[in-house]
Image 1 (cartoon, rainbow, N blue to C red):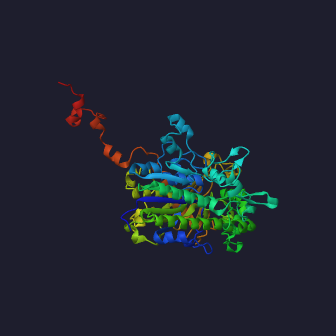
Image 2: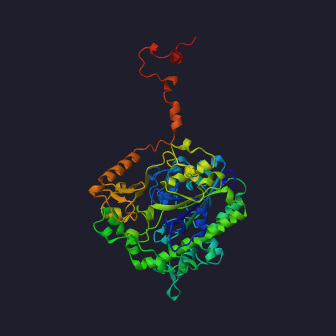
Image 3: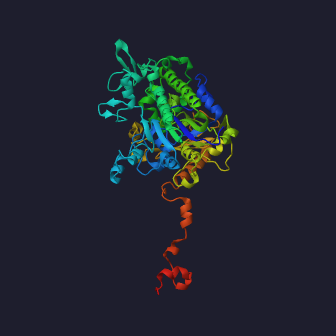
Length: 549
């Protein structure tokens, strides 16, 4: 093993549940390549994202800051100019920082125009691309509706690749990679989940996951010997739930785990929870026939990712890259898949807000923790300071910006004296039908989660809090928020949330050290406040105000 990691490979899947890997206990879905990475690194069992939705979660991961701090609280909300991201931290340390795949980042066009930043300039591209060099940016959702595209207004390179391979049309991403052959040779769109188990019209090697793997390898091949951080960001297993052969029918309805839900959850639920249960995606996934049709394909998409991890790691070993690269495997959030009568993500049960996190540190200092699990409370914002430390920077010197903590001590088997006592996540549901149904103004449509190892609180502005006893009810089936026996725990976690809300989060232009160094020095620059007589202070402080001879 080398002395330290030279490179960083930051792999992120989209909408991958924490418990849909065999190393996390899935009984039917075998993921040997990801499991092997865990056997060589550290597998975290309590890793939480800072928001259970793509855009906000990723902006927190890339900035190392909570959603309330960076403000990009929902998909399509721009990350304001001036927020530092991974590239801004790593590039000055000589580490090339590149992207292959998705960020879900929306550029602050208005802010760039105000500051006169040309979007095509080097600075403009960095500001527009979350600080990454966009080796290949592809957010993986290229839908087209009557009002135009929902995401990714630029035609993706992947579509051109498919055209070159003989897949015709303006949007082969949809027509081939995310659609099947339907009745009467019609197009069966993957947006309709009844088609999930039909094979996508694209050949497996031309589907999104293998394509992005090859593009990641292209970058590593071209990067040469200079240190790099590659964010290889897959769109799958995110919907549309459709897969190419053989992954479309690799699993059967009998492989589907029973939904984690109870009828009691639907009896007098919390008003916000009830409104989320009433969303169309939740009503759809509450049907057992839908789960039997969709979840086997969701599993197949994960299996395809694991197979591609075998391709990727095999190439890295063959070319001498694996053993000098810190490798991170994680997700931006989970997927309810009908658990708790919910679909998609957007709420705070573990199915949605907890993610897999596996980190392989090739350096010798990582030997002490190699193959272990870590049960500490970890947040996605911890990755930015971890990467900074790996690159040779000092996360403590950036603590006025970075709100996460470096995971290097945990990767080395050390037990920090004071690790965080609770994890926090946030969700802005102002864009969701639930806010309109509840009559909640967008500025008030905010949810907060604070969780320790035994309890989880969900706070909704304008409503009572929900509370779950994670020790005795790990499936989170019983809301104890109104139980008098739990009043003490409710008060304790609400106090913790208030204390978190009082943190210093916007003083990002001065570090603690700078403030310490400047404190009490105003008099030495001629600012003399409250002086009655010249003899009240040292004579040297008057020197600038005495007649000059």
